[in-house]
Image 1: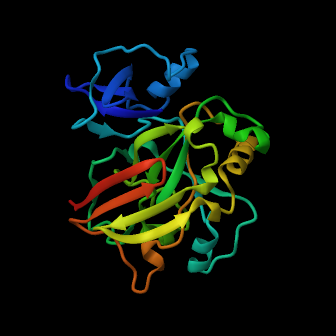
Image 2 (image 1 turned 45 degrees about the vertical axis):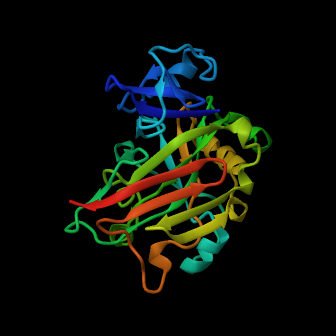
Length: 282
C-alpha cells in the first residue's frame, strides 16, 4: 500500500492513502515540527491503512506532491554507510553508524524545485538514499525485532553543499539549506518490502546514471540502524531515517560533477519509486 502528501483540488494539503488511481485524504497535513498527520493518526490509535476519509477522494494524476512526511519530529541522516562509497572517498569503514539531523525546514516534495544561491555555494551534490518512516515508538529495540517498527520506505535526496560541509566539519547546515531534502513521492508500506537490504537504487542527472548500487552494500542495515539509534533516542511515529548514499556522488568524481541551474535529478529505488526534482539557481 502507498501513502503520500498531496495538494487536493480544494488547494488543501492532505496525507492520503493511494487506492488505485485515487488519492483518499485521511488526515490534514501540517507543516510544523511535531504536528505531522501520520504521527497524529498513529498516536490517536488509528491505522492509516483503514482510516476513514476526511474529504472526497481525488485523482492521483496531476496532483501536486508535498514531502511524503511533512513535519517529522526527527529527520535523521546516516553517513558513510556504503562500502564502495567509503572506498571512493578514501575513508575507513566506520565502527558505528555516523548520524546527524537534517532540519525539517529543508523538506520538499516530488516535483518541487531544489534551489540554491550561487553566491552561497556552487558545489551542490546529489545523494540517493533509502529512507524509512518509523511506525511506532521505538526505544532500546533489539535488532531482530527492529523492522517491526518500520511503517514504510521512501526516497530521500540528501542534497549537500560540499564546500560548506568541508569548511566547518559538521554536516547539519550543509545538508539543510531550504529545499535540500526532497522526500517521496510515496511511502511504500513495509509489508511490501520484507527485506530492505535487497533494493537497487540509482541517481540520474539529466538522464545520465550517476549512482547505481544495491542496498546490500550497506555497512549498517535498516534493522541495525534502528537498534543502534533507539539505544540513545526514542524514535517516534513519523520520524524519518535516511540510510546513507552509495558510490557515485559528484564530489568523488574526477572532475567533480555538481548540480547546476536547469538540471533535473531523479532518484530511482526499486519497489519504492522515482523522486524527481528540477534544480534552479536563484
